[in-house]
Image 1 (cartoon, one colour):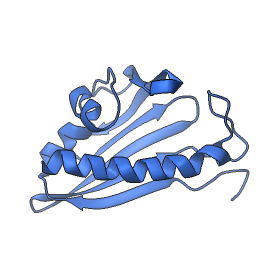
Image 2: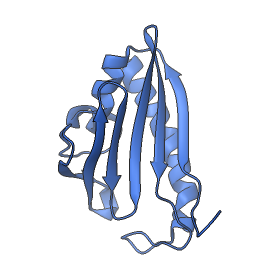
Image 3: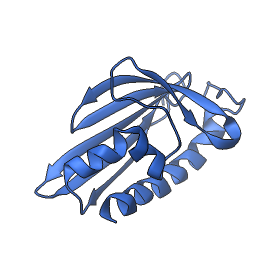
Image 4: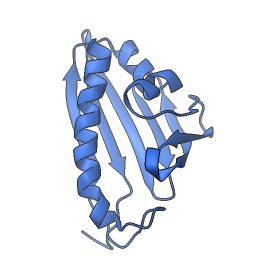
Amino acid sequence: MTNGVMPDIRHTGVFNAPIDKVWNAVATSEGLAAWFMLNDFEPVVGHQFHINAGPFGMSPCKVVEITPPNRLSFDWGKDWQLTFELKDLDGKTEVTIIHSGWNEDAVTEFGQPHAAVRGNMDKGWEGLHQKLGMYVEG
């Protein structure tokens, strides 16, 4: 770790679903709502939207990169960035979810240090990655 920077959370797996189906699950409001959180996402760079983070309220986001059907990134809250990387594997899709922006010196909008939250978020993304897989394979 340098300057408090902590490693990104990364989860990668292969789903038995075509890349277009997986892309629709990560790059549409309806798709994200089905396995992640309710939102008003639109797949347009610069679009500002919110995800409903339950007890933590409406969390502001902004689309920063979209390259269909392979990569989507959006800023989440004041510190984080969420990226979905998709790779076509002849009818199956490799999906990597990257949650970056972790810093041991930073505190979330809801007052918790990044160092205290990161482990729970890592476990949460592991479960969400599996939930995404069940959604696109179902």
